[in-house]
Length: 55
Image 1 (tube, rainbow, N blue to C red):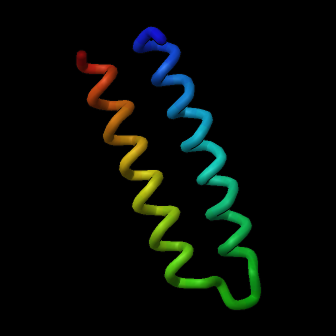
Image 2: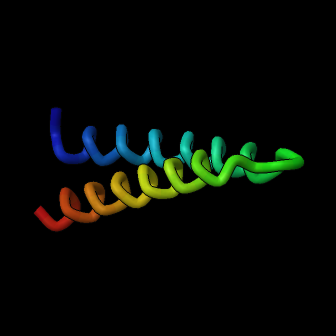
C-alpha cells in the first residue's frame, strides 16, 4: 500500500467519524463518552495523515 493509498484510507475513516459525530450531536441527549471517543479517534487519524504526508 502506498502512502497515498494509506492517506486516502485514513481520510475516508475520518469522514465516517465526522458523520458519526454529527449524528450523535443531533440526538436529544448526546452521549458525552461517545463524543469524546469519536473526537479522539478523529484527531488520531488526522495526526497520522499529517505524519504520512510529511514523509
